[in-house]
Image (cartoon, rainbow, N blue to C red):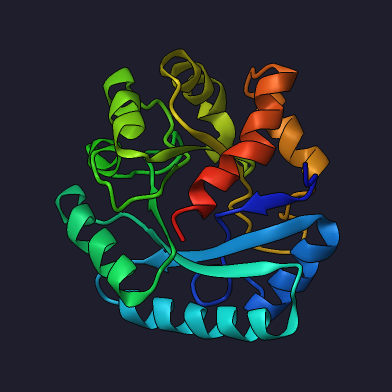
Length: 221
C-alpha cells in the first residue's frame, strides 16, 4: 500500500490562502502527499472563475509531474442551504472534480440546515468540518456517498470525535483533510494518522480512513 496521503481540502490565494497553487503542490509533495485538491471558497459570484483558474493550475502541474496529482475543486461557503444542489451541480459541470460544502463548524455562524442539504446532495463529495452533525445527516451522507471530514484545522477540529463516532456507527465514509491556508498547515502521513486517532479511531480504522478511503473518492474523477 502506498503510504503517501491524499488531501482533498486546501486553499490558495484564489480565496483566503497565502500560496500559489504551484507552491502548494511543491510543499505538499515533499511532505508525502501524492494527490491534493485545491478547493477555494466559492459562491454564485465567483464559482466559474475559481474553477477555471484551478483547472489551469491542475493542467500545468500535471504536465510536469508524473507521481503527483493536483485536482481542481471548490468549497461552497456560507451559501444558502437551498442553493447547494444547484451550485454543486454547476461546479461539476464547470470541471470541478471535488465539491466540498463548508459545514456547520462550532466556531462560525454557518446557516442551520447546511449540513442537511449537503448530506442529501449526490453532487457533493465532502462535508467539511460538520461540527455537531446529526445522526440523520450522517445516514443521508452514507446513502448519498458524501464523505465526512475529520479536520486538522484549529477550531474546526472540535467536532472530530463526534463526527467519527457517528460515522463509525453507521459505516459512513470519513476522510482526514488539512483545510490548509498557509505554510505549516499541510499534512504529513504521520500527522493525518494522528488526526484520525485523535478523533477516537482505532489504529486499523485510522489506517483505513487515511490510506484506503481516498481511493473511493478518486474513483469518481
